[in-house]
Image (tube, rainbow, N blue to C red):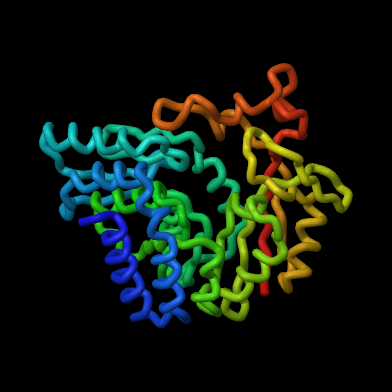
Length: 328
């Protein structure tokens, strides 16, 4: 089976499942958008990852849990099966989000996402029996952690095909009945009008030229009383301020606007969202984001000033992040 055909079939199955719960408002738009992205999905690197993925069988006699903050898959394997599994895992580098573990093998991801999750747990509203959306979900690490809080379901959206295939890899390891992943981005939110109780938007806002528009789009998918958990880079000042880096910021090209915390609240207010609470502003550390043998040799440390780690190598203030919760 070709990659795009595989993705199309998987999307159809997922949409059928979500339709049984009356969650999709505009299914036709999603199919149309998927066809428009066929060339991007069939990019040569993605085809190589899919070929590697296709070598694995499905494991049904297995289970997952969270152990030592890693999403851990316990799978009965013969020795030669484990070697194949390890080869596939290695082929999926870089692993940006995690950590994950399969039996005794740890996937030491670039981001130690359990550190962010520990901060999120102090802020997030109840997820029990709620419909949860993770917008820009990456490979799904946080979705697994959300599932610990007994939601009705968790849907992840992310248009990045390698992340989508990493999640499909997890689905081969064990059935994931309450977790769903669709390879779409924020531009398809209008297909989910008024469907979710809680929306997580983490590490996404600063990648958009019009952040207020994105917040307005997020608002449209919330049910009455719904909440947004927004985790983003901010500019650490008490004043209302927006920093717009020219060129790269910490080695990244697509960083458009970094608001101060008070400016972020004003943006949300313009989008029709009311502020509930915010965490402290914390600088991202090289303990939380660092190079590993499972990621790449370049990470946060390599993007900071060699003599002053409070600055990026471009001379800007180093990344600081905040968690803010807003409601309809």
